[in-house]
Picture 1 (cartoon, rainbow, N blue to C red):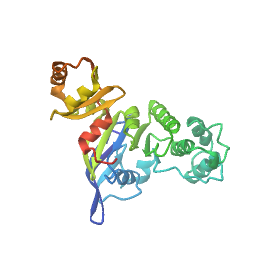
Picture 2: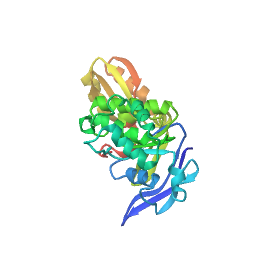
Picture 3: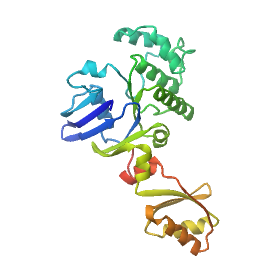
Picture 4: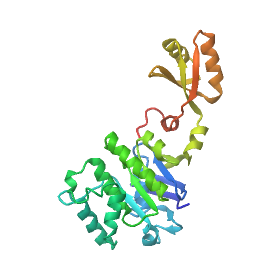
Length: 301
């Protein structure tokens, strides 16, 4: 494990933001960190990066305590927390050189990280000319200056258009292939499912579930299936009336049905007995389905 979070707690007045949190983050993983607004995600990240001090518990990075051995623990960590912020009237290259000098990083590293994030040809342009996606990639370039083994990204695709989201997503994938462990907090469930190998969900500062993405989706109590039928409206009305059907939506000419795992055969039998022809039943459980099963449809991530 590159990161071990043990019994981490933090309160602000009477409100407990993080409550006895335990997480193990495997080396080389892309680890998604999810939870509703106010669940303690940002507070956890701030304790991981020593921006605030926990009331109880420890964060270990490569077996070094962040609390007791801050500089050594964080030496191999790069972080982009919230929105990247730079001097807009200066070039991306100049911004990074200023930061490199402050941290004692070799200036030659600046061009390397600009190239690595796809900004090599725009490094001399002023930041005010950058798109939001480019600014986020510049923020990741800043986080890469120190040759990190662990990259912590807080909402890296927040506010980006689809192209910007794809650029950041592709970059995260590439950095992972190079062996960098990436811990990523995001409210975009589809994005997390596309890039993360592991995921943890928290609520009110407590861990709800964690593990490998594929294992959690398989173990979900709610099975979402795509059902292809000839009589769409009839099938939807019939299934919606069953108390073991938790969700039934007609999307793009097919039914998206959420049922208990042991009810799939009964669902097909019910449709056929009522004159509905079923041509396909395809499992489609997503991270969104898992999230809603844990937090409910009214939760806002």
